[in-house]
Image (cartoon, rainbow, N blue to C red):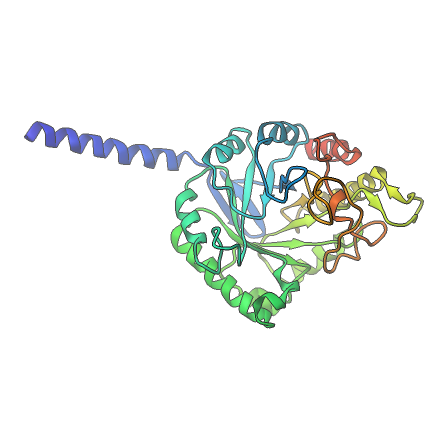
Length: 336
């Protein structure tokens, strides 16, 4: 009896020790002043937004994760941002094995899929809080443009956001909690949302976000990253020397200038996530083909025609063929 008891104790200690050991071998994510640190070294986000919806569907799939990660590594991408949680340990492990971090986004009302409305997002945090691939917990995606989702009062969202951030911090103190806000917030809002550790901003200010970055340092000392920036590869009209129709040169030129502006202001911003990895054929029409059209709020700043053609934003097309902007991003990300 005593021998069995001792063996059980030893096995229990071993199990606890193993989990503790694994946890402590994770990267240490911290914030110092405006800077994101991993293992006490500055971490600069060279990222891409990732929503891999295959042709002919409207549902995300990770069937091409191996090919996608290979392309991302080639391009020098170190961070991907997803708009809803990845509830697949195999996918998260592959992201980690590739040396890439992921920003996990939680939506407000996602029919109960780890969302904020039902509170089920906390189950995800509890389940994956020790996974080394995860960089941030990110709440919402430019919801400030959609007060109609919150009974006509956007303060209902801000209140829910701040409470959700606190709930995450009570479960997991190892990762920053952020949000993706549409354009730069008011200084008073930053003060109100005091449970956020850093801010993501979706910004479309033509091909140069420099002024936004200058504005940020005047109103906050928290880290900032551009959670969305970039350009699509379709010109609705001929303008600035770029011909009408599919135009990969316009996209490549715009993304080059945006990335340069971010890199040149690395004392003010912690990186950028270019929108997005693959074209989204489900967004503006028949998901079986690529349609011209689509609209997003506050996006008249999209270079160079002021029109966001929603199905043409990829740095690769739906078949993973590289667009011209892929080579631009590859050159700049790998040499930063």
